[in-house]
Image (tube, rainbow, N blue to C red; front, side):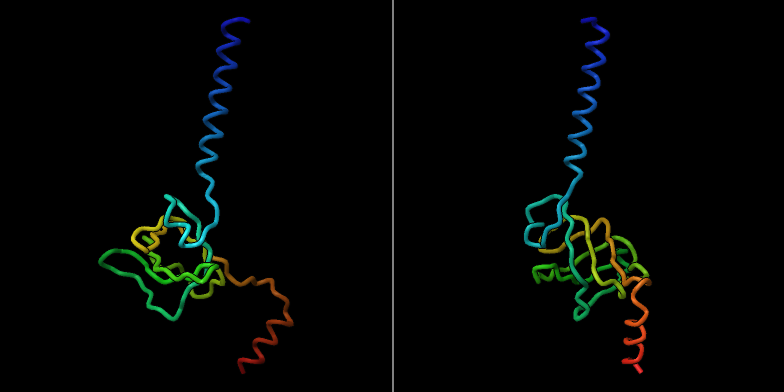
Length: 131
């Protein structure tokens, strides 16, 4: 084999290996708060616990709230940005970050909000109940 061909094949193999390694480490599975204790980065799915205090602190510039994961575990979540506009309407939350001292520090937060494409007959039913 020619040395240039061997060098090219080696470079392709090295690049592919690095790409696969980086892809593998960037994938995070969905876990509950207890499993997140042992990980450096986690995705936790749950709902906002509206029965507990929440709010934005001007001193720390962080939004904090309590969230209940899918297994019923409730933990305080600290998010380093202001409260998202549609936070109260979200039907499900996904927080991405790490657990430290029983507090989840989220780097990012995704919200699932009710769809505006719901069945119109259901919307009329809900509106009729509210009256």
